[in-house]
Length: 161
Image (cartoon, rainbow, N blue to C red; front, side):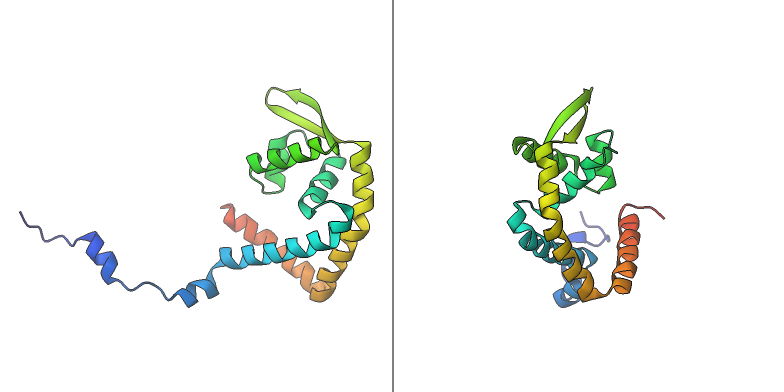
């Protein structure tokens, strides 16, 4: 039995693939990920003497405000996968930098311990060094504009208008 409908597998094979150079040059995800890794490495290197990575420092700083009612809320605010955040929080608990203080059903709240507050204080000068290096390299006005554009990119990626 024959049909006149084109074979989708053949059709795809006959269509030329976009040049890989064009994809690499244009791909938003690639460029954002490359930049995120480079920036993370710069902060981690500057913060190495403190014993904290930038991800740990940011989490400790956020938790120290006491503004979060749940892990889910914190994950949503920082655009993190809940499972990744839970794993990172557990590392901070194991290190004695935070402790769970309240659990309501599956929602848990963590508080920064005295050891955690001391770690934040010790890390601030190292964070400031990295921040000044990156921000200074860009220029304050350029960084302000870039921060706004990154916020817009996050909104678009989340499907928000």
